[in-house]
Image 1: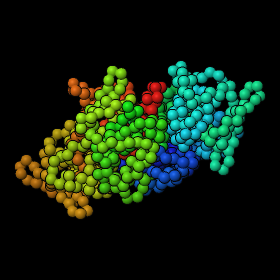
Image 2 (image 1 turned 60 degrees about the vertical axis):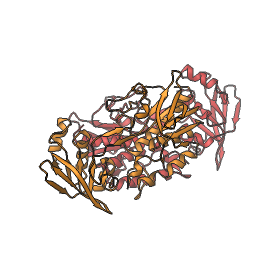
Image 3 (image 1 turned 90 degrees about the vertical axis):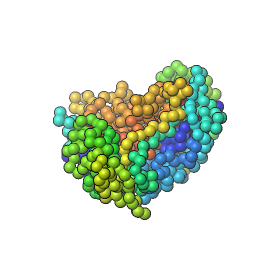
Image 4 (image 1 turned 135 degrees about the vertical axis):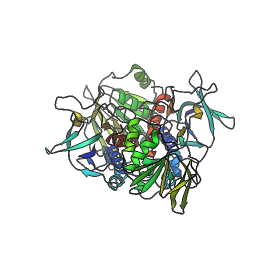
Length: 312
Length: 312
């Protein structure tokens, strides 16, 4: 029986592993089917993790993390978790894709979320080299330059406004001629002089070279196209929360979720289910930053220790 | 008029500075009367800031932070802030101890909290070298060793339970023979075999050498004393939240506070006052960890950017 099972091996899961083991929990396993490190390892540069400076990649940033945790006894099991369930006695079962399972007194789930792809040619090839899904992370790399934003929902519009303060110009590319967002946000978009709307336009292909992206071609309904020369393309066409492991056999979730499939938490990263904690990009209102996910992981771990210890 | 005023220069304030400036706010000043870095700079070793490994001091950890922020335009003003007020139009005034003031559209307050001292001889001399006020931070350095905990309230008891899982023995030193805590917590203390209660005992003096603490002498009402040989002494006798800057001339606070003087926040670090955000150890349920304070600072900054930008 594990004291704590951690599902997911990004910044939240690794920090949860660091704090649970260093805090004295004896048996803690982090289930991560791939290499630990998370989504950030796909970024070509990160400069906003506090205290770590210089030109480093997301991969560079994450290299020391697993070793730091393992020093305190965190075990990493390279298994895919399919589902987490909880018995009426409060024991959690971690179901794995190979048909085996493990039991745990507490669970910290940190499986993150996955930004949807818009589906244009070159999107995957240039991901992390000019194609981004995070304005907070990557906007500054285009300070004083022009960028394109793809999408027409709340997030796309808010991120376009964020980028407009940093970049010289933002092309907002949207398939329709109306936006799905609050009227006040749409007004702000229309009143921001350095945002150009490119409407009824479908992104077809990003072009680039060894240095990264240098432009995007969009197509219109009448068959015409337009080439927009930008070094950065930000895609905001939705987000899949990786909440599958919380889905039970009857279709319900193991804890309360928001209408968008994120886990509801309080300031302590407690979910509505005792002994189950969430951390990182899968929880509600997640800012999707490495340092925030790590902070979540630490908080969740301290709560898990107290829970396992019985004074919850 | 500043876009954002950051009050306090610890991990929360510095990260708020990094994210506000990198996110495009033009005029951001961090008010910190001393050197930036915060309380952690008094720690002789930190090993639980994710991604930063090796034997480093709290000071070492914090050295790169100010430069990282200043690169993006954060200004540091070495002034003491006495009070933050807000006009009915929503403009904040930052009142300084030299009688001058500054105005700001938004404020992130990160002034931390200060653990109270128990008042024994040597407490200050050995602080950070065997005397600690944070079990989560420093407990692991005494793995398998004996430590003393001083205090009799909720925090002291919970921290003693945390330490009992890591250390071979915990001496719980308390001035009285009853505890101010939940009955269930007191029961757990009494049922934990490696916690020894040292009651009606006043800590008098820690002893030590160049390596740090090696013991603590306690005195009893009958005039007898007892020498307890331990390399670590954890003091939990209360905490002063540094909330003075939020206190208004009529004695009220600028935003809603908990009964313990902490700032009430939601998951976004919003306070009850629009445009005012809190981050780090001064907010409710703060886990008092560098990575958590930094995460708070990032979240608060993203909210401040959105607030200043008008789409709040």
